[in-house]
Length: 339
Image 1 (cartoon, rainbow, N blue to C red):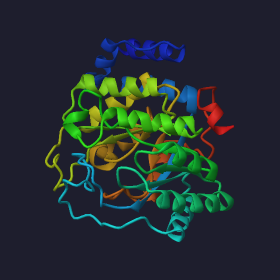
Image 2: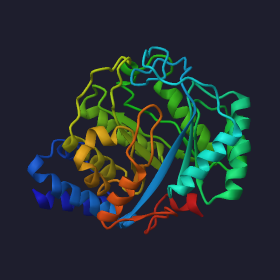
Image 3: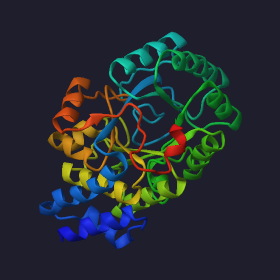
């Protein structure tokens, strides 16, 4: 069986796509074969990224006050979770966040705002801050502000925003079970709007929302078609007061299999272990860096992360190194983004 994982990895590196049957075999890998599966996914990860790990940090630039009805989100209109609610922070706060990201050795600073989409005033606040951030720090900036208009995307690009995040979150078939206030196609359209403006696309998923294994495979394949340069893989951290309250479908070994699946299907892309890492991977967090090459440091939007020093120690203990440039060690479709 071990030869199966390694052979599959070699074929992926050679440019082949895995089959749906092989994808299911990854998600159903026996636990006594898990380390061998991770070794196979690491062969792919190492081919493109070596032993480097990219660090990302989030600032929650606008919290709550969202009209959307996303079932997983503590900031949605359906949520009764006790989260902070505030409008877009000012430029000075965004600059302080960039300073913190730089101090934490994060290569990418993620400016995230709740809501269906940004107002022009909110875009102006972000662009004004980004121009100054780019002058002060060697940081890449990712914005995540909801559904974008083309002219807003152009403003963000002109200001120096490197990447725009808009997650597909789940499969197209499962999407109506998670939210009805916007469509799956709305999300795809926003990613393409950012791409047309010349901004690197970031789009990912949330696993553990009562989806089927086939949905997880569909998510990974959809992001391959979308050609997302960065793929954050979130694991549901069910929050009391949200429609998905009490949902606990995940265990650490399954989360590792999901990360391996995303590496096998999207071999050249940045795979980032994102929200829910600490509560779902638990003591197996270090193993997640064998298929994935990126993590968040610090807190998430409405939930706490672990101390950044613990993440730095984890990376060092693995013998990995923080990647400040995030240029793949071998050629890939990411190369043009970093030129």
